Image (cartoon, rainbow, N blue to C red):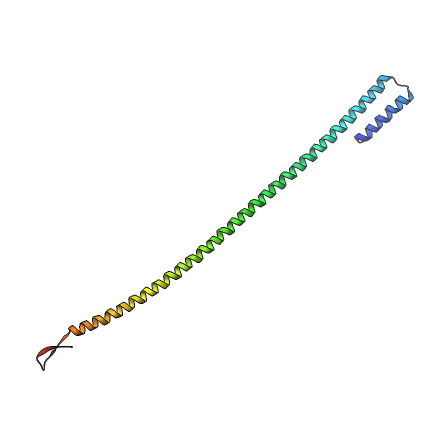
Length: 145
């Protein structure tokens, strides 16, 4: 039997008691007080149900807020990871450019050194040739080579 059914039963008994006029006023008062307590109990139960519903609503809001904050943080983390990865790619590209420039300069310098070595070797050969004396047995003297 539900609270509402019980309340209705008390209400019918009270009405019957008043209509029959067989009961004294104290019995009627007791019956009315019982009805009032039943109504109060029902109101308390409804109030508790409302509190539980409010708690559930508040909990749902908190869960939603937490999920939103978690999603936002994850998005920020993902964005920062993407920025770091982009920065790494840019650094690798710049390093590759520096390496290419260095390699080109090394080759250029090696070519210049080779050209200088050849030039110096020709000059040295020329100097050696101009300073070299060969003994001519026919003349009996040294002559330039």
